[in-house]
Length: 373
Image 1 (cartoon, rainbow, N blue to C red):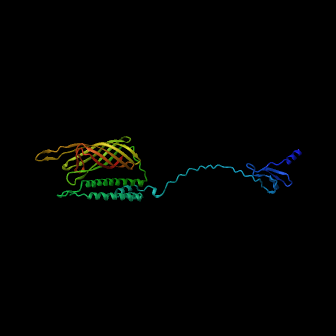
Image 2 (tube, rainbow, N blue to C red):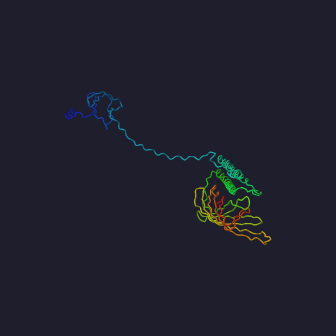
Image 3 (spheres, one colour):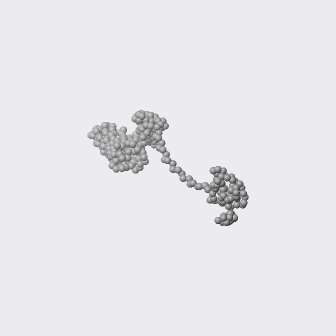
């Protein structure tokens, strides 16, 4: 056994082998410096001699609790970075500031808005909207009054007075119709919107309604006998339509009464079918068609050198189609406007004693409001 140990000590050292000897020259440890080698060796505290592969000897001292550093690179464990799952964000507490809370007396907002546009939004703490609605209503009111007062009732009455051109007069009447219709819609719309703002509500159109009741004004501009040569023809009517299936409504419409000179009276009513072709949240696009029937009484007694007796009553019909846009300002209230194209099959009577002859193609502007039940 002794000779085997002696042979081992006399054996040549391996390349790159380091040796650690104690003070008596005995080998304490051998190691190789390189990848995968231990970076330190545990030995008892004391003084040692480090023998490098090239034979260089160096005295080293290892203290209590220390390890002998071999000089090999430390192995660094690579740790993949795994992002830690973040907890879901906590729900934000509801805003409790004054601007987000409903107004205490919300009923006052639409009431004041109906009296003075914009005042309802002021109550609802919406100063920007209050100023905008007031400015819009004031501008439309001023424009309507100015257009209405610019007409001359005595135009063309003086001999030699040719009066204004028909185009100019038609433009004035058309602008007056648009301004007054817009003013009515703005007035109603801002009062309803004041209620929505005061309650902090979100408007959702009532799609699944059963019955809709409408109040509409249909107006056109046309020629008339004498001067001024142009006049407005207005028709204020009521309609009641039932939704027979989704997007389709049928019912009676254009219900109205027109008084005429001489005590004559015109009653009118009709049928209408309307289809909803487009829905975008609070905006609907409708296509409708129908017929208007009119019956005119004739109580006036005719007493002329050529004829005597009573004027006969008249009956007539008008066919029409219209494109209508509905904007919901409340869940069950919409503002309606759009064009109507009509052709009377007999003389059609309007308010103010005016009438258009049969077969006269007519383009009317329809504006009004509708309530859904």
